[in-house]
Amino acid sequence: MFTNKQIKKNDNVEVIAGKEKGRVGKVLKVDPMKKRALVEKINIVKKHTKPSAQYQQGGIFNKENYIDLSNLTLICPKCSKSTKKVVKILDDKSKIQICNKCGDNIYI
Image 1 (cartoon, rainbow, N blue to C red):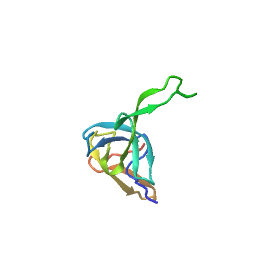
Image 2 (image 1 turned 90 degrees about the vertical axis):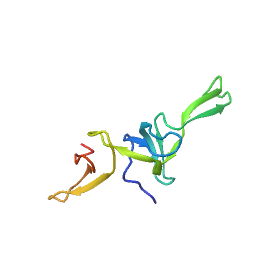
Image 3 (image 1 turned 120 degrees about the horizontal axis):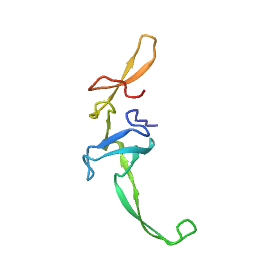
Image 4 (image 1 turned 45 degrees about the horizontal axis):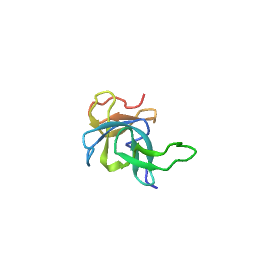
């Protein structure tokens, strides 16, 4: 099973490749088996639906589609730059994740 420890739910990410390159959004969902993530307001597609109990009128709806994890990079909440996480082991054997650029703790 593949797990990308770089990107999790509620992280801010930047798209580094594809038609949405340069856009920033919040991760809504991650699918580690397919190596894809659902990012808010990124990769919008149109979905055609017939009338049903859930959608009384039917029609064309805009929704987010999954984007590959290799096309995303994490944004540090402190320095607002795209970065990678670095795991640092403290003296008491606990692990913290720090920003590669500014050196601050990413998750508080």
